[in-house]
Picture 1 (cartoon, helix red, strand yellow):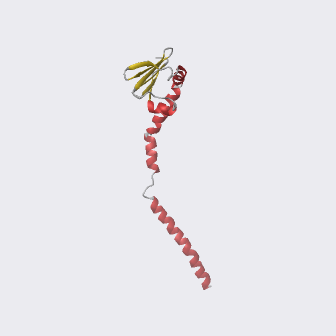
Picture 2: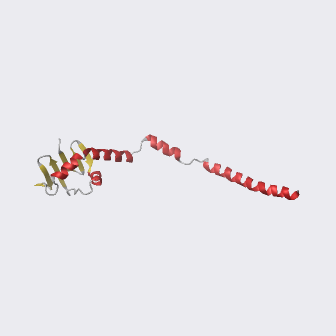
Picture 3: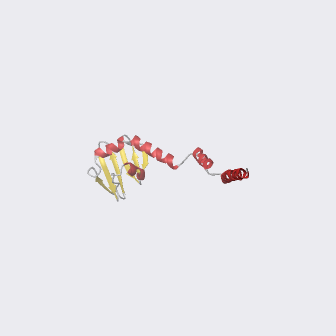
Length: 135
């Protein structure tokens, strides 16, 4: 399977690694996927394109240099795919941390206590002024 790149049913196969075409196109935006077709590249044999049952050589549209580059980047695609999968599905630990970070019902009560203490502070100077006025 060494040196194999194929595209079938919206899945890119690079040697033993399968990669969704949508993600591959994020990494390789210049790649032109054949519409309703399959593409296969075997190292040393060039590219074969099959569209609607008709087989043709595809070396002009998919040069061997490009295909070799995609095969060489397999580990990069694998890492990107793993990172995207991890970003989509947060672990249970992350979920519970988010739940703990949500505001609780006790917080509004704490705000009211602060408001009361500010009111008390405001009334003290008024009381002191009255006391000073009495003297």
